[in-house]
Amino acid sequence: MKLPAEKQNSRLMRAMFHTVAPRYDFITRAFSYGMDRRWKRSLLERAPLPPQPVVLDLACGTGDFSLLVGRQYPGARAVAADLTQRMLHLARARGVEHAVCADAGQLPFADGAFDCVCIGYGLRNFPNLGVALAEIERVTRPGGLLVTLDFFLPASRFLRWLYLGYLYAQGAFWGLLLHGRPRVYTYIPDSLRTFVSIDDFSRLLRRSGYASVDARSFILGGIGLHWAAKYADRTQ
Image (tube, rainbow, N blue to C red):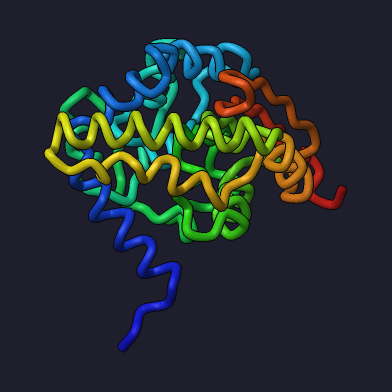
């Protein structure tokens, strides 16, 4: 029996991130010139969360957002979710208490379970972004937040070409150096080729059940931070 395309993509994502997991944190720092942690802190500092929030760290990797939430909000409960068991093992080793294996397209959580959903570098890798956003909106309480950090396509075609070429060269360099396989980290530009710009994603969020959307761009529009508040009244 042939698996549906989305299931095949999920299987490929799981296998790929199993390979890169031990070097994942290093690579995110290298590709962001060390700005990765600062961007994640900024996302949470600008998010108006309630005291002791319940937060979903989706596509959690090794649990950066979960750990930041615990430090910035005493009494908070962060749930880390990822498709890859090896990532979850590394997250637990760093001190993440609540970690579950979950697919963004079919989240095992109740409606309105979270005050906030955080996603770092996961959007591009969801096999169906629209389905994932619908699930994220479902598990977020009315008035709750979605905050994201990811690579995006610059608006200018020339800058897109330049940016993708740069990411490809850097990915090939680190893949060859760390794994002896140049293609290991070129998944980043590969995943971007069919992705969207920062403004495109902002518009998609507005169509997906979010009342207000704010965004900041870095590296000529190649990196974007988004803050989106879900409608408090689902009938709007």
